[in-house]
Each structure stands twice: as structure tokens, then as C-alpha cells.
Image (cartoon, rainbow, N blue to C red; front, side, top):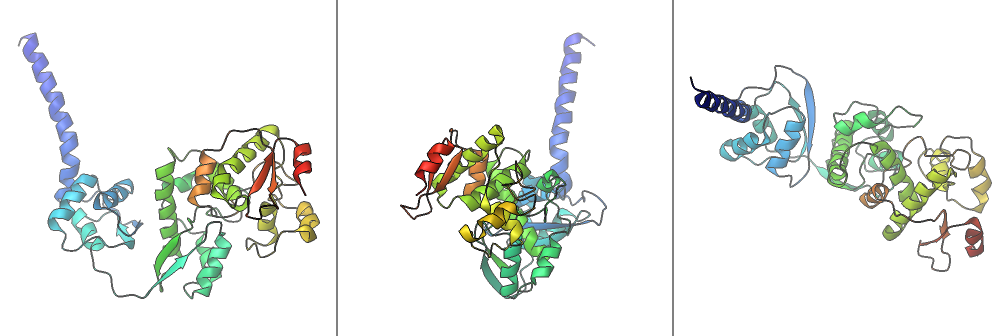
Length: 339
């Protein structure tokens, strides 16, 4: 065999192997070969108006199918009904046809309710709202925060002296829930929404816990969206200079057990500054043990992209009375602008 023919055969063999690697996984899905024999259950949360390809990506990420493109083809050619939104329980040993049948099964008529969780609400406040709406009790919701949830970003949350590991990751938004939903389903939906939002705005999950902790502080400090990057810059400057943050909201989180049902003001200023808590940013430097609320997208973006400036201080601009702040570089400037 001459050298040229040998090279041709080798190249052909490589191409054939590559083709097989590309063709076989989708083919296994199309011909209903399950990805494993495991009976492990996986909760999949699908938001309204999620595209079929996006659903395929969610399934692929959770290792329930091999190819989102094969899933798309199979749904388009075999599904009798559209994919339904909500939380679905699937098993790793299911075939692609079984998964599609489960996801496209028409919803049983169940009463729903819309609930809006404002930006900056804590897990504790969310739990109280759900109880007020008659869905789940506050204690059930807070206990379910300790359950196991299958989201990659959760592996980046470190062990720390926080109240709830999921504080900060329950994305505040308006949700439509079934009135008979349990706490685990509700939390799964909120975590899934957070995951989608964060993936769209961050390159990776590296430093996600630090980012969301900063975002929660920004959320509580800034009332005007345009000021959030500026507040984020002050936090960064204080970290670099070794200054304590001196953020009242962080202490109030500890003092009110996450409910923020005490108004900050001169009457409690001394109590705030002397409270012995790792959330007391007057006594302890650096970030709080974890987020002090669940921040909205604007605050998350600010934490990801803080404004670069030299400000170290800010206070409410009482002359405007619109929630805006006056930012200054030195304590002298800060003191001189306080009326």
C-alpha cells in the first residue's frame, strides 16, 4: 500500500469516527435508548413561553437526554400537545418519548394564583407573603429552604454563618403558582428563574456568592436604578481601603430576623451600631456572611459591573427627597453635605 493511499484511509477513518460521534448520540435519543437505567428523580422547571430548544437544553444539562436537537426534532414530529410550563418530575431512566409524553401532558385543571415578590424581599418576607396568600405556611417554606435542589450554581455556595444558603437566589418576580403547590415546587421555580437570569448576564458561576451578597447590599441601599452601579463602586472602594461598610440594612436584617419591620432612624441608631452580629457592618469589616435579601436584576448587574470612581461615602439627599444620594470622596466632604 502506497503512502498516499494510507493517508487517505487514515483521514477517511478519522472522518467516519467524528461522524459517528456526532450522529450516534442524537440517534440514541430518537430511537428511544434511555441515557441510563437509574430511577433517580429530577425536578425540571419550565417557565411560560420557553422554546422547545431551550427545554431541550435544560434536559441536556440535567443529563436526561443526549441531544437537544434530536429532542427538538422528536417533539416537532411526534408530540400531540405543546410542552406545558411548570415543575415536572422526571427520571434518568426515561426514554425521550416518555419524557416528551410527560412534558406535553395537558395540565389538570388546578386553581392558580399570581404572586409578586418585590425586589429586595428576604426569604422570610416571601414566606410570610405565601402564608398570607394561603399557599404554604411560613414555617413550611423556610424549612423547604434546607431541601436539596439540583442546580449547578448551588455548588458554588460556600459553607458560612448565614441563616439560609438560598437567601439571595430566590429571584424576585411575579409568578403564577398552583394554589396547592408545595414549598419545594415554589422554591424550585424561583431558583430556576434565577439560574436563567444569571446565565444571561454572567460568564460563569465563579464568585456568584460574593456577587449576590454585594447585590443584596446594593438592593437595600439604592432606591434609584441609575445609582446602583455607583453604590457598587463605593462597596468596592471600601473593601480595597479596609473600611467597614456601615450599612444599616445589613444590621436590620439580623435585628428583625429578616423581616425589616423596624424603620431605621435616630431612635435605633445606637442599637444598630452595637448589635453583636456578623451582619453588623459597623462592628465587622468586609461582606456579610451572605445576602441580606433577594436582589433584582439591576442590582445584580451593578454588582457584576461596579462603577469605577473614588467615592467612599454617600448619604440620602434630603433636599430632593426622592431616594437619591450625595456621593463624596472624603469624610470631611461627607460631613459638610449633611444638613
